[in-house]
Amino acid sequence: MMARDQRGLALVSVLWGVAILSLIAAAMRLEAVTSAQIDRNVWNATRAGAIADVAVNRAILTLMDNRTGRMPRVDGTRAVVAVDGIAVRLWIQNESGKINLNAADKSLLQSLFASAGLADSEAAALADRVVARRPAPGGSAPLAYRAVDDLLSVPGMTPALYGRVAPALTVFGRAATPDQSVAPRDVLRVLPGMSEQGIAEILKQRDEAAPSTGPAGAQSDYLVTAQARVAGAQVVRTTVVAFTGDPAKPYLILAWR
Image 1: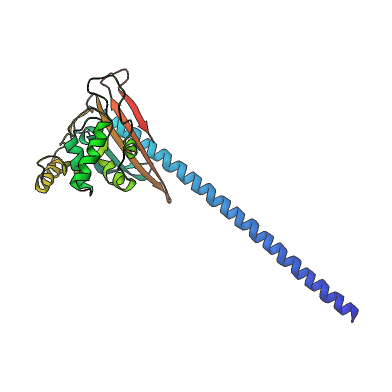
Image 2 (image 1 turned 30 degrees about the vertical axis):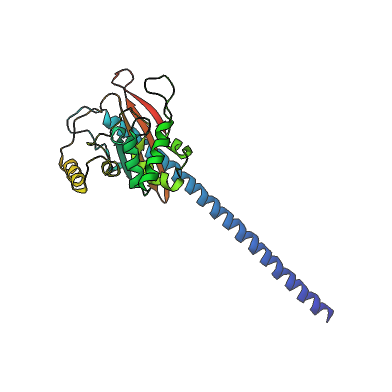
């Protein structure tokens, strides 16, 4: 009886040992799979970032190309370009088509805030506060707004409202009035005297126009945005580039993210 009991205990011990070893092997296998997946995700994100960088730099070179018909759309219209076999979404926006926080008049800012859902009185008060932060005209004081998100520090500007108006705003350039020829739809709809029919006509003319000749104009600032996705890893790269007209230093990078 005792020998039989000992054999039974030995069998149980063996089974427990096999079970423990199986759990260890399963844990090691899971760790190896997880580690490999993490490595793949890092690689995919790194590759997506590199592809987005290439797309941005190609866009800058294209903006400098002076051959006929090479100038891309610069009104924020989405394009798709191929980089290393990957389709990249690309947007180029001439910043002169946006509303400048440091230069636009109160009425234009008020119209923008009202279009984003504020009551007229609230939109007017917020526009007053935005303008009040600017230094006196002609002075040497620094710009009141160095980045569009500086607007969040103005009393009355909420994150939700900011999310609705930010795409129409810029801090680059000094134009007080947006250039209608490159203004995005959100800007066109708040310009004085602009109707939905007028907006549709402007956008139609852009779609039907032949490609412009380059290069991009001197003293012009462009926002270039590239979105690349590799096997589920997505990277969005944005940069603001200023063209100088100086052959020795044709452009400057004003912002890169």
